[in-house]
Length: 396
Ligand SMILES: NC(=O)c1ccc[n+]([C@@H]2O[C@H](COP(=O)([O-])OP(=O)(O)OC[C@H]3O[C@@H](n4cnc5c(N)ncnc54)[C@H](O)[C@@H]3O)[C@@H](O)[C@H]2O)c1
Ligand SMILES: [Zn+2]
Ligand SMILES: [Zn+2]
Figure 1 (tube, rainbow, N blue to C red):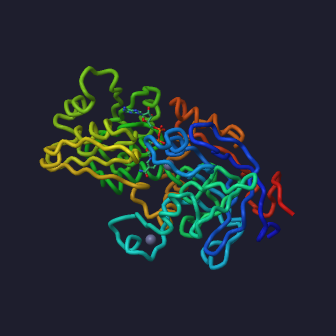
Figure 2 (figure 1 turned 90 degrees about the horizontal axis):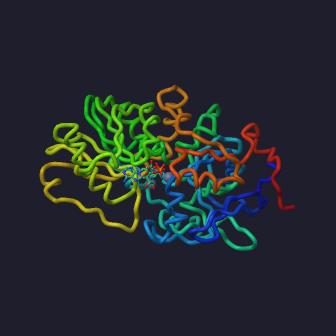
Figure 3 (figure 1 turned 45 degrees about the horizontal axis):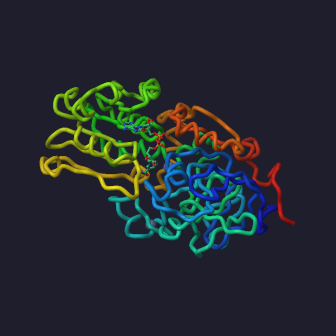
């Protein structure tokens, strides 16, 4: 491979400081070290968690080190592998994973969880297993978000944070399976274990919430109530399977009371896909006495949620989910298969497509409630052959 072992100079969207738009820069991406893989990213999308980590750092989210290359919902092609890597070769289509799967630890061996902690603490600090990042810009180390950083034409990831997918998968669609869609879909199927003929309420109808609606439908729930303060989301929610859509702003009473009334006692399953603690409490309170289950998929790292103890005492279950409960490496290729076999929708989540240069537009569209997912093209999708590298710069 022409570029193997060399530093690659390419474009990336760099977050220099929290609270400011991303800046398109020329970065240097070092070759992969032991048990690392360098990936050419073809497509990525922006998840709400990227927005939060840029614009809500130190508030709803803990502060991560800057400068930083964000992005954790991407798909690409292996460019080269480091020593000790056995599962990947140049040209493989892959999805980087913010949740690792080492396959060996107690958690990977358990059916009870998907929370592998390999390299965890380092990934949270934006560095690889050796304590450094592979991306630099203007001579400065740039941190890698959750050990992935898909807002770069090339990135380096650990071989436990990457999964190989089928060669006919369209990368500009399956990139969505790197986070939001998998999370919401699994929140219903794996965490909630939604049952046939049950009633469900999904709070928040962004990509995570719509995927939760899709999961409830796949589980053959009878009633799926979509709840959002932005009624523009309702049309899409019906496409994914919502039977009713309601806007909390249309009612004088709290939304949980509306849901309890609509369902004569509460829903069997409530899924919170917003990331606000008041919505989390409302979701719990909208579930049915005795067996209601509330799953939290929305994210906050700094706040506490109010729980009425009697709600739990009366038999409800409150649980959270990380990446929808999927074991990342083995399960994501199966989700890709489900998409290819028309069992799972992906195109329907994509409302916009922009080139890397317009990545800040994708952030604005998400925050403004205009988009579900914007797919960003980083490299030519026709140019899946990692030997081509058209339009990129290489250090001699
Ligand atoms: N658990 C995980 O592993 C995981 C993975 C991905 C994303 N997330 C989190 O999931 C959440 C949703 O992500 P997304 O990308 O779908 O975001 P998004 O911004 O696309 O969607 C959020 C939706 O919530 C709606 N909303 C806001 N306030 C509301 C309220 N009070 N009541 C009802 N609806 C309200 C918005 O109008 C929007 O439609 C975020 O908190 C994100 O950080 C968690
Ligand atoms: Zn995400
Ligand atoms: Zn593990």
